[in-house]
Length: 432
Ligand code: EPU
Image: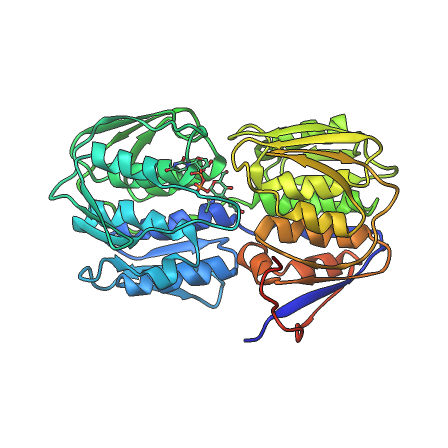
């Protein structure tokens, strides 16, 4: 399929109700965890995304069948355990696929998984994943760009998993999955506390694992002999939900987002309050009703329960039409600021020094041709375009398709004027 782009006519207030899909960042490790199961697994609320399709291909390469049934559930079953190599061609398309290494090692005693390499916003190492697996007794070598991990039987251990940038979400997931079948008890100190880690733990527990403390910095796992298949529903996507709420605020709209767990977004609501963005929440629903321009905010991204790095770009778009000067610091990914140059092309006033940006809120943005450089940067450009004067063309939307299920359909149902069209313009090499 050729490249596509969005054409977005700005200036339409979003109004209506929309539902968040299942969480991408929960679904991916949970799908990987089905490698551990003796029987079939049935997963509900798995979003239809490019990243899910890529992982499904990797799983098939690893001998696991993955199929959507007519009700939309994703069914998995291990067919053969002989093929335990996740190739570069697929892993390099999506870093999250590195989370197959923990379950492969625990279940099959061997895993060969390509090192994922860097991504659009930085280096993104996997040293913490490897440190954790080594502590469980795995022998690990790196050969020709692949991590080769072996262990006859993993042994429980006490593992400190904090790194220079804080905790690691998928690192915690990998070690938790591996420890679930290890001999004895594992304690992960400085574990990541994200709701997606809790969701993975709950899935493992539904398969028969013994795990306590997920959601805190200390997780205790008592290894069990085997894990069974099970049926499980993935939590709602807090990042998608908040992106839709920010889109609503951006257009001074009135939008209700359903199928959402507001307790996963406390840091975001705290900033909404500071910015005087009108919102109402109850147990599974959040409504935004925005009138004027939001007030300025100061945001430093932090591991959960701090403000998520995955919402930094979208919130920056919103503050580009705020009333004062806002400050953004990405402490988790200091280079995750590719959207800044594109937002500037739409008239945003941003001063960037290292990982810190000062945004001077403008009255309005202007449409311009812009390019998505990664998933969340792409979402930020889409919501900026919704409020810009004129018709914005957002290119390279394959990044957006990685992590937002039917974004344009959802926005259109709220009154946005957005269409997906083939992008015939030639892909120019990067300007030097
Ligand atoms: N880090 C290390 N060593 C490691 C692993 C991570 O130094 O071995 C560093 C990273 O470089 C980063 C920090 O630790 O500075 C946190 O990275 P983390 O490992 O938590 O990220 P991840 O697990 O690879 C997940 C999400 C990301 C999200 C981050 C942070 C998935 C599939 N991905 O990645 O989501 O930004 O946690 O919350 O769960 C996205 O959805 O757009 C996305 C990038």
